[in-house]
Image (cartoon, rainbow, N blue to C red; front, side, top):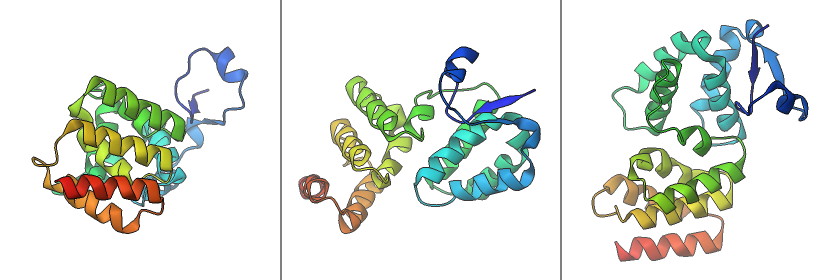
Length: 189
């Protein structure tokens, strides 16, 4: 029986049994389910988005054809989904150049925020294209960590897309502390 752990690979079967993870048989996953997961990946960042990303990773090669088709829809785009669908396809081929992406788009916002802090600490700019979209994360702590990382990278002059995203985020940011920080960054650049 093939099983998929929707929370990730956390080690032994005992660890999985000690927690109430939802496990499903891969044989029960059909194209209809995969298409629904892909549809969630095309929407705004949300719990469904993050769960769908992780599910597509865990479903594996069974989802490859539909993920590849979706990637091709974005191939001429600068939309961050293009990079995520490419990441998934590479993952299926055992190519993982930026392994923290799995945790940057994890369903648990605490894991997302902690990994942003780790990237900030290391100054690893290779994750930039995966970090910028997290300015729209539904969780305040992730948005705050994202802004801190982007500020630490000091890439505003070299990245007009980032400046545009910050300006757009200022207009829709509900948290006054985050909004003030964004306005400060924007006024300096």
